[in-house]
Length: 298
Length: 298
Image 1 (cartoon, rainbow over the protein chains, first blue to last red):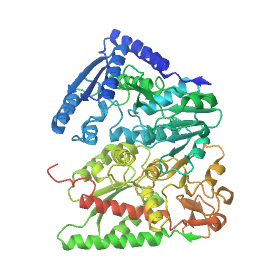
Image 2 (image 1 turned 180 degrees about the horizontal axis):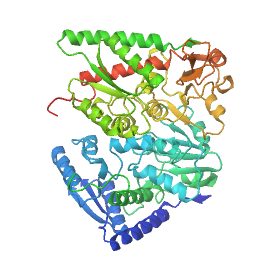
Image 3 (image 1 turned 90 degrees about the horizontal axis):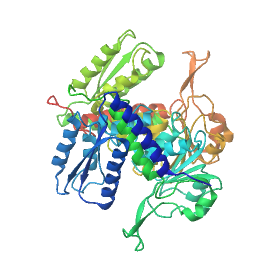
Image 4 (image 1 turned 180 degrees about the vertical axis):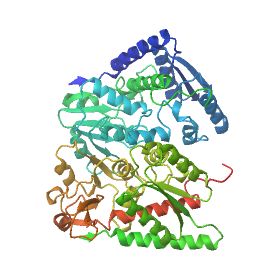
């Protein structure tokens, strides 16, 4: 059984990006610049954004964090988004989700210029992903593919079973995994309405759990030799931890891991890869790899 | 065994649309207006476009057919697309595919204003489809869902196996079938790299064949009681037919049909439903059901 160490792989990727950034800077180009908008004080969001800022430092990126109280109106937030769209110094930016209820997340996402949408959430990027066209691929699905690839886990022709049909993991991952240019796998998406879920899971060569239910996947749901990717990161109260909680995956690691060829831990699996892919997308934005860079003339 | 009669169902839908159009006209609104661009003289394209024009008549729509020789340049064609984008009299329009090789289909598709893209091929519509947002759903996947629904074929919780991962059928159908608001099914997408394809197919409650290989699905690939949807419509040379060919589906109807609970014929199954759904999308465009209508002020 091999642990798919996302923490180490993400560190490798950050180093590769940092080396590329130094080459760019020495060639007279500017450092990639990622901006993040954070609204309110949600603990999870604070942590995620802080980790993204830290990753920017490790990659040699410039970063800008724009913080707003959760009293900001939707119109005010949309104006901030448009300001970043128009700022030629910013290569890409993200709006950390979730947003307060009085703001439409979808309206915010669709206001981001898709050419700076390094989260890959804009419908143009999502649509281009499914059509197999160049685009910003959202970070979690992209990170899962990269983690498998770097550990030599073959996906072509394999049965991939995805638990969960969310817009940020399940559906885009299915779209990537089934395409010739990416996973080239036989993909099944399961969810709350799936009958005989355990049977579906046992057919998987690669099982991806992305439902946010701690400990949902048990030993009887996998066959020996499976590769398990655990996307779940739920905060579970735990008085023994300094912060009063621990992160729990969707998989009962202790009982499932012994059956696996490969398995991702939580934390230290998919999470760090997600941030590393956001950095890759930002580098691609700065280099104009996917869309022509936006110039002041646009 | 019940035949899912797409021809009759499409005729019913055209009648419903025509009744709605008469209500609209009597209320002082204008008739929905669909335009189609046809480049060159491909026999299949000629037939499809002629059928779309006929369907417009049956629905009480105004229609405009713009024909161009296949010597038209990409720039000239894009200018025609922009003209239709800007024409407030046109509610929606399509560019019949395939286009000559010197023209980028993707560039043409992305130039169409997504608010008039009644084929649902623009990345914004594709992206919104996968995100479960209001959009123009491309006609073939939408027609398959509607045909099943109108014949009382339950999809929720059923195993749907889709053969083929094309941008116009396989992938968007998978996106629809897995969503709670549409199919709510457990979806598997199979393709040329799938191992044990027959075994995957035999697990299907609903099997959708969309690979364009005449007679690919044989009796040993289905289990008794299955619902089979045959999207294939390949022209096979046949000297005994007046036009020198017949349309062949992906399924060997004679041997598969006796095992089925329901099956679509070719022709007369999915094909007419596709055109009926294009009419539904055009009606929705004229009413501003999905996006606000484009006015001269935009």
